[in-house]
Image (cartoon, rainbow, N blue to C red; front, side):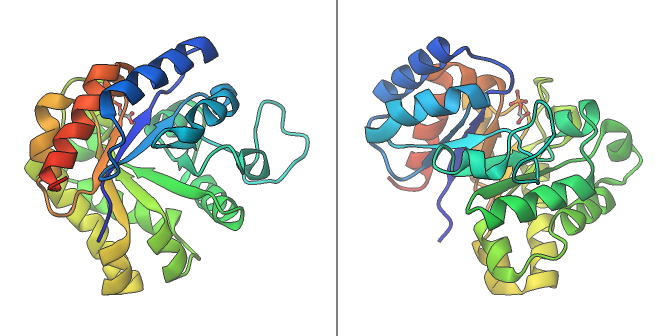
Length: 255
Ligand code: PGA
């Protein structure tokens, strides 16, 4: 049984004060529902104060990135040991990091190994560009990104992590993939896991969809059997829309 996840990727938004306010607002709206894992991924400076605030709230916390080394001369970076105790999850390979900050399949793989070694759960993002999509290269792009990101991991490690399919053309554009397409590509991701690690691993690993999800489309997306949740950008910055997405998902899962 894969627990559905609504993961809010706040990106470079929210001061500490704003993050505390938003989290309190969300908490009031969602009640203490446990049917859906509610993951908040604020800027890393907000993790410590949010950890303290959410000690009796039903939220998980995640970072948006970290380095693969434990420490050293890497100005501006944070490391997996620094996140331990503050975050349970960490996002890797988001297309914004790939496009704007030089993230590659190789660094995503190194970071994924490092996070797992420090008991952090990676959320590995993959997704094709508009050009790749139009050239009919979606499947080959996703296949090579997934294989490269998970290279060298064993089945148990793959089972514990989360993969997010985020077509680049759908991120922040208001143009989500159709539920059917999103479901098919998440199914493709699961097939790759099955080929490499077998059915038990493929059946346990959570696969999310991300890209212009909102209350209006989350129901049809979450009805896809291979989709276990959403990585939500814009709509996670507004308490009501995030809480509505959690509630719609909880209802679909019969809670
Ligand atoms: P969006 O962002 O929901 O604003 O499209 C999704 C993401 O980048 O994770």
